[in-house]
Length: 539
Ligand code: TXA
Ligand code: MG
Image (cartoon, rainbow, N blue to C red):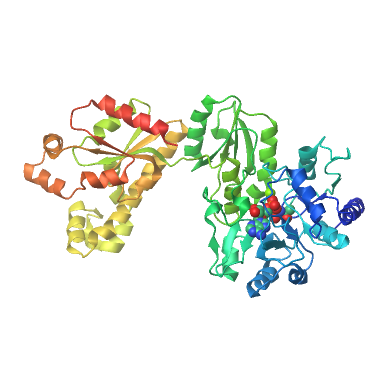
């Protein structure tokens, strides 16, 4: 429902737009800075007011689906999208008609059209009687405005050539429902492309356009000269403060942030609900929503960023959401806010692997002296069988049991008697070991301790992807042999048989971040220092 007061300012804004002035208007996504899209002079005022690069095209807002034909050449897919998602937060890029001036489209022969859902926005468009070109109403580069006061703050004290306020008409429609700009889909080619994620999600769009692709720039930094959408390359949504995105589970991310923040004055973190208590008390924490509710994160994203930025922090850490559904839109905006400065915080700081007898256990012990918690994969393997007993009997049958518990001997006989037996056993056992290791790492992270996970099957189990850094330890066979004989009390033949089944140096060199040769020529202390140095350089 539109109130009496709103009605008055809606009429004023519509009148101003008819006179080819600019006006800030609410939409369901973010506030837009609007002008008559058919007037070159009017549209130029938008670029001037925002300080927007001339090569970044504007979206044209319409109030009826039927108006698509007047400004563009919609095909069947365009109608399908419009009928499914309009009015709503979706912009469709199509070939433009002559009537749209080139200044709107930054010289391109295509135009983005959108029919907003916000009642006030549509009323202004129909009262103005013209389509409205409207980018987000922020100063170029700043976070988009989701409240009228954000627009007021951005343009406070800024005057035009006649000494009048630069943005004189601001229609206050309250807080925007979505909080992130519309989803942008290009229909210029046979294969439709998602250029900017938004509230209409990739998953929803796929149901209508099964061959829809995501433009590489959505979650990646692109350096190309001619991007599909110019908006993808500009510095965007940025705070004045130095910002850094942090990915990963709460416990591991907060461990990193607490440590890293010591390098900055007055640090702040924009985090998920429930994480506040994980940060040092002298930390400014601002919750922007629930990790499981990306719609909430989207709605508060820019407001929260603007609020923190106003407080002059030496550094703002931002927790990044999972990039799916509406989360992809939030993720995409935050990558740009942080100018792609992102740190991933997996469960294990260091993953150690290598050949048997190469000395990874010794190195892990050395790392303990530097404050790391040593999680020994081999030791966890012992309990792992008992934990997945049910699954194992399901796969290999009841005869792997002895007195009601798994017999390692019977199990191994069974496994080797079956084709691909090992391929069926490994994922079950590895999964169980990994889950235990992650739980341990989580407990350690909560008391501020990073973990080193030491596992012979680090790569085979997929654990390497859960490590910030993977270190392989190798050594020539003649060095490893005496170590193994002494440690495991096995015969030379048994040791050599074990070696023959192992991976060679090339395998480790290709897959690891760092390969250490522990042939006795350097001390363990030296090797551990080398790991720590590499770790601190790795972002
Ligand atoms: O939700 C929204 O779309 C808001 C509200 C005000 O409607 N508007 C908005 O506009 O976000 P703006 O200018 O901040 O973003 C427009 C995006 C840019 O990334 C631009 O590069 C892209 O749309 N775009 C516009 N026309 C295009 C075209 N012809 N080809 C490729 N990309 C285009
Ligand atoms: Mg914008």
